[in-house]
Length: 216
Ligand SMILES: CC(C)(COP(=O)(O)OP(=O)(O)OC[C@H]1O[C@@H](n2cnc3c(N)ncnc32)[C@H](O)[C@@H]1OP(=O)(O)O)[C@@H](O)C(=O)NCCC(=O)NCCS
Image (cartoon, rainbow, N blue to C red; front, side, top):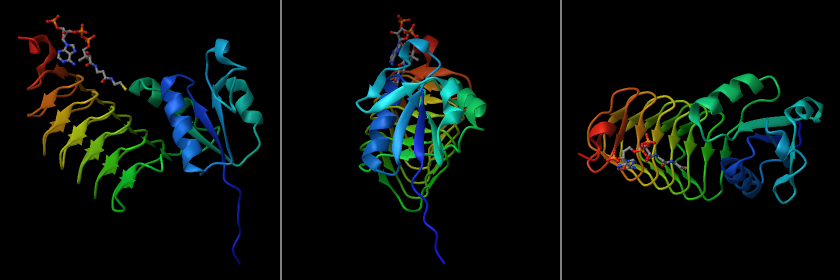
């Protein structure tokens, strides 16, 4: 005997610009019964994040009728991670995938990821929990993206690139094939990474160098 359950109501936590991107993708995906936004900022409560998507106080979330799903839509990687931890009991964390994202069947996507419109996730790529692959970004074959990392709009990762936990690959940047970025690394917008980048460093420029030397 088969049972059917209605699609979940999606809670998008974080009512800023990134929240709008997530809500837009969630609505386009038609995977959810409805979408509600929430934020810790009281000045947003009662407003709408996008037309038809109310912003409610976090205190209201436990009163929502299930089934529920949660996506934390905060651009700052460490804050996104922290909020996902704090809100875990409210609903299971889910990924949101825009229908115009191109996602290889052999890739693996952990819960809590956003795959925005026109991004590409190639064959055998692995995305850990809470990763953002933003508009038009390319994560090519065999890449491994650590939890809570952000691949910003139009960034391009060649094959087998590894990106560490909570790192930011800036908008329009390029990481060459087989290069590894450690945890908590920032590659500045438009940078081109030719070599491995150690954990905790910020690099920028073409070719990318540690930030204090980026403009040297
Ligand atoms: C690299 C980055 C993190 C540096 O930020 P910061 O620590 O605040 O550094 P500052 O803005 O003080 O700049 C420090 C120096 O680096 C240079 N610099 C900053 N960003 C740079 C970039 N992307 N490429 C080349 N040089 C850059 C600045 O010109 C400055 O040079 P100077 O010392 O000769 O004046 C930031 O500029 C950046 O590119 N962030 C990524 C943004 C992004 O893509 N977000 C995703 C949005 S969805």
